[in-house]
Amino acid sequence: MLDFDINAYLRLKPSDMLIICISTLLIVWLAKHFFWDKVLGFLDARQAAIQADIDAGAKDRADGEAYKAQYEAKLSDVKIEARELIESAKASANQEKRDILASARKEADDMKAKTRKELEREKAAAKDEMKEAIVEVAFEAAKQIVNKELDEKAHKQYVDEFIDHAGDESWQA
Image (tube, rainbow, N blue to C red):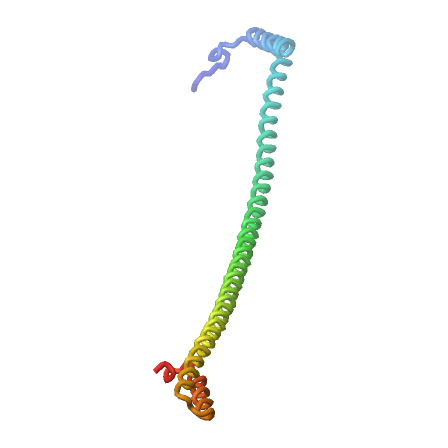
C-alpha cells in the first residue's frame, strides 16, 4: 500500500497556515478600510450608468413609438386631406366645365339670335328694296300702258298680274 502523508505532500505547517490566515485577514481589513468604499462607489456608479443607459434606451424607444404613432396619424390625416382635395378639385373642375358649357351655349344662342335679327333686318331691307323696285317697274309699266292706251279694266288686270308675279321666275323672264 501506499504510504501517503498530506503534510509532506503540501508541505504545510500549522504555523504557516496561521500566518497565511492572519495575513489574509489583514489584507481584507486594509482593503475594506481603505479601498472598499471606493470599489463600492465605482460599482454603484457603473450600475447607475448602466441603469441610466437602459432607462434612456427605454425612454427613447417609447419616444420613437410615440413619434411613429404621431407620424402614422399625420400620414393618415394627409391621405384623407389629399383625398378630400382631389374630390374638391374634381367637383370644381366639373362645375367649371358646366359653367364653360353654359357660357358657350349662351354665346351660341346669342349669336343665333343676333344672326336671326340680322337676317330679318336684311330680309326687311330686301323687301323694301323689292317694293321700291316694284314701284319703279309699276311706274314703268304704267307709262307703257299709258302709251298703249289700254282701257281701265285691262290696265288693272295688267298691274295685278305684275304685282302677283313680282319676284317669281316668270316675272324676271
